[in-house]
Amino acid sequence: MLTQIEKQQFRGLLFRHLDGIVMAPAAFALHEKKVLSYLLKNKTVFLKEITEQFNANEGYLNAALRLLCSYGWLVQKIDNENDIIEYELSDSSEIAFNHVHHYEDVVKLLKYSEQFHQRKFELEPFLALIKIFEKFKNNYGLTISNDEKTQIIQQQILDHIEGHIVGPTTVRLGMSGMFHKYFMDAPFRPEEFHRDVESFGKLLDMFSYLGWFDEKNGTYQFTEKGLFYAKRASAYGVTVSYTPMFRKLDEMIFGDPEILRTRDQLETEIHVDRATNVWGSGGAHAVYFNAIDEIIVKLFNQPIDKQPKGILDMGCGNGAFLQHIFDVIDQQTARGKLLDEYPLFIVGADYNQIALKIAKENLINADIWAKVIFGDVGKPDVLAEKLKKDYDIDLIDLLNVRTFLDHNRPWRPPETSNPSRASQSTGAFVYRGKRINNNLIEDSLVEHFLEWAPYIKKFGLLMMELHTLPPLVTAA
Image (cartoon, rainbow, N blue to C red; front, top):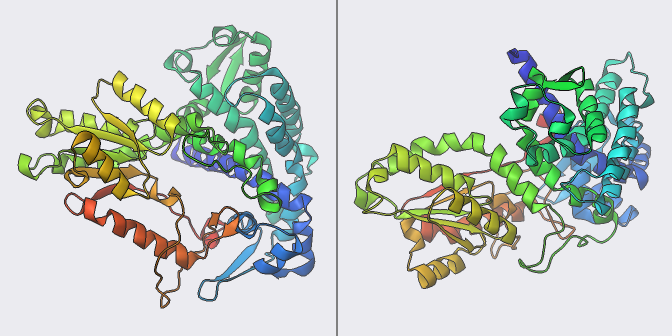
């Protein structure tokens, strides 16, 4: 049984793994283009100045620099009122920047793996991973410093590299069934899971070195540490799903900012592996679903004439949230006993065709009758019109729910702004390479919710969201 301290330590390492999947390609791109050297030389620079100096795309450059600030490797000074951003060295900058070159191998693997399938184990990238792991076992040649600050940064770098070793592999294992109870509850041999016994055995040895498995006479058994991470495999999913974007960060910052842009919703996305994203988000977000149960139960225990006619999940992903809500209503509310007389209209809407396909399959398999349709969270009027025209359903009669969606809506500049208000946000927001002023971000958000207001005034909007944190908080 793991102690609370051990759980905190393992959870902290998991987050550093995720950090590293993003940090390595971003920081290494800045290193390769000599941006970090420029910062060390000049000590304090305005974003506008460094953008012009390196002919960079301001929005993506700002995002990359802010990422360094989130680790305390740089300090951001932002004046939203005058739209001025400045970066200056911290007391960790020189130490961190002098260690960034150690990311080179994992960044090269990131790019090399582009020619192979995102979710399959293939020999060539695996052999490259093994070489990286052998270097990792020797701390990448680092002599761990006696200086506390240097030691902390060295460990951060190594944890980030470990994230590239562990993250994508854990996702592939999770999506292919490795973390089934069959393997988690009893010892097993490599041939029980994979036809390439030799390579899979090496992979298990790698994870055994990290403390995830105990090996004895050719059999492997999950340790408590391994079970901790196996049960949280989906936590890696969303970050890993953006691997196609991370391998292009150098081009996005210093080249074509629209290299990953698709022109319409029917075109296959190339900035994200959507199937992995849906898998990861469905699993990782499940922990939050229970938080809304009390609200759902209270609403659907009301007199029937005061209840919504159904549920609409905008950005339904794999349908897991809809399935959860339906089960809660069915099993825990008065409405659940009246579904034959007062059926619940379940609507899943999403912008992505792959997500719609997966949601439809999952809801059918769960024996839930649902309408799964295309929808854009930024265009509620269009959605309302489609529901009325195709299904004679009024959007206002449904409980609108969504999870982690509004922050990622397609950008539209606000039609009006509030010049008397200056944003307090430190966020870095980008549209096709161009930096978006934080005041405009907030003005746009206000207009976005005003567009939804006519459709949520009856039953409200039930949502879970993400938010950014100031770099000073995350770096502390």
